Amino acid sequence: MPLGTGTASYSGSMSNDRYVNMAGYTDTFNDGLDSYSLNAGLNSGGGLTSQRQINAYYSHRSPLANLSANIASLQKGYTSFGVSASGGATITGKGAALHAGGMSGGTRLLVDTDGVGGVPVDGGQVVTNRWGTGVVTDISSYYRNTTSVDLKRLPDDVEATRSVVESALTEGAIGYRKFSVLKGKRLFAILRLADGSQPPLVPVLTSEKGRELAWWPTKALPG
Image (cartoon, rainbow, N blue to C red):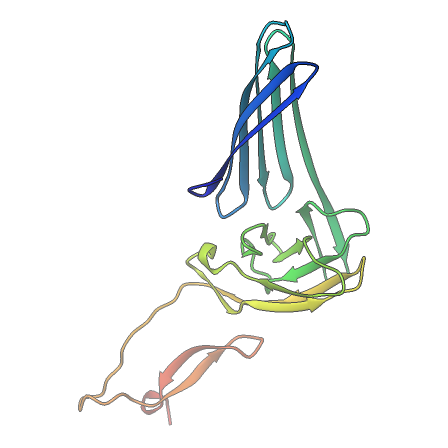
């Protein structure tokens, strides 16, 4: 049963005249990067002492590993606890990065953010390293996949001029896609001539990749 952003549930079963009734709640937060579930119930009947039981589960998807923890307890019975972490590293001629999830030989996409680190990709599940590379592991083989920069989480001094890429990879392939990303401070100003009109502008500063970084009024140029 949906309840807000989560789901409430109930289950009941009987075995050897022993009844088990459980109620639970499951929810996600942090844009789906974190999830948890809580369940509690009672074992009764069968001429035996009633026993309360509880179990809980939590998972978190970070850029470097998928983490999870669980605990289960049965009154006058047992208590168990477990944790797990999964991640890996991908090294190619285009770059290398540590990443969460993925399996040996699984389809992956190496993304390049023009050497700019700390850029969130794929809903924040991937954050590029200091060299501007990251690895997306939830890639479907033989289907068109759309991967994008997470503009909502983008740092204030970073701008993505090409924020969406597509790929269609065979099973086990490691693809490569590049985003167009700029990093630096931005300054905005409104220029007007004495008569109130706006002067024509020409680019006077470009990056080594040919991107226009600054403009200047033509009448203010020498000559």
